[in-house]
Length: 592
Image (tube, rainbow, N blue to C red; front, top):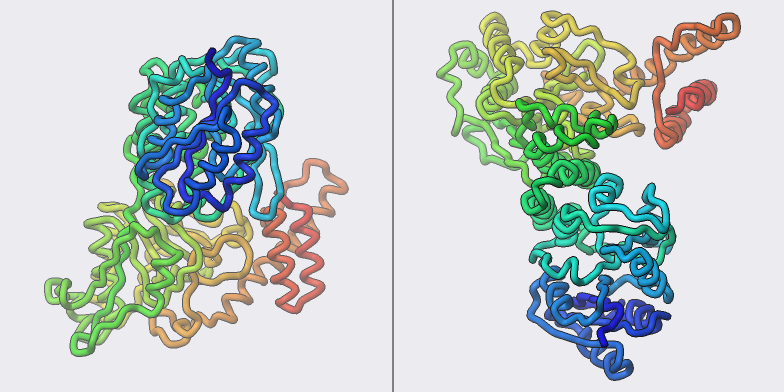
């Protein structure tokens, strides 16, 4: 007589965490069930722990071993050895409630469906539990795989489910990390019947060093992308649209969780755009449309993360790595970034008369900017100054526009950071502007050229809302393909909202192209920007008392709760208690 349920547990070097998992399984209230442990080539004491458990519970526990192949092949081996009518999966460092499989078995047999799905507990490092997988499903009701893909929100874990063996035994897990992400989409595309249990049984322990917590590991990036591609490639053709919709939501989540690699996830969304945009679910999901609006355009491309910096004028001196390069590599740019130093060894000022004139005058900074702009025009990429200090990863911004610049001050564009896709007209026109300015004045600075280019030629009007609207901190031009971000994004860290980079304060005094931009003036400007909101708010408040249709604030402070607390702390540090009280009140009123 076959078992009712087989539970498969892959084990790799889990000796220290196995006891809770084993205890929760061997004491299940469901009779006629077996626990299959697959030792995946463990090098610690795991196999002995498993064998001791098997000796203690010989009628319930089976142990199999294989060379280390990964969780996917371990699960495949477990399925091949299982005698249960239904199959469940548990990770070796998690545990379940003692009545888990009795209740799930009762649910799946009562409705005679292929898969039972339950809620689960996510357990944080400090032991706090939160309930997940709250689906808009009714109990005692049958749903389909398409229903699950539409509403699961990218939740492709397998351990909160019970499966009919006859339905899944034809689907093998791939030998990659995130094997469950690939497998689930393929299985669900075959439209199984599903029931839902609105109770959590499974305790998912989030551990440092686990597959999903390895946000920087390049192997996890490659396999997470491969898992989504496999699901899209191997799912049934008639289910392609709902699969694309479900995995697009997962990829948006992964891009937020792993911003270092955001553009890689965005590229995959772009690849699937035909199936995605054809999906009726996508057409009804306004939030996902907003999140992926640019990505589904045929001409979308991310700015390449190829970083150009310069070191001209030191031909007779030994070359040294920029002092801030470590901050670029460790936090500002993706680990996939390429770095190229431009100098006399790979650039020839002699080829361009105006630049040769500037170079001969010792204007090495302008020379460097010129060749960075030329390299970006040809290849796409990012130009940085050696004075730039990385603070927070900015990779997602490379996918949101065709070019990126930043304010240094209201009347000045920063020469320390800029980026563009290849062949964008902004770079072509900047190169021409540099040549024209250098021919007139070989000692001109790139900051002067940039500021004249954007603020005079393109008539960009600086708005203080660029600094105070923390949700949209840029103004745009070139038909919205070029963004110029606030000073708080790439010039100075005010301690509120995301600051991606700042200029080394010493450089603000010593660098000729940054001369006159005292960091104290920048700080003062920022707080004056905030302070200017006070009379606007006062007028607005008075107006609303007599006019319910009063115009909204001309200067809005749009912040989250966290940003409001951050700003309150900064204002206290600024030692202006009255201003702190006024601003805090406004922020509370305008909270979003």
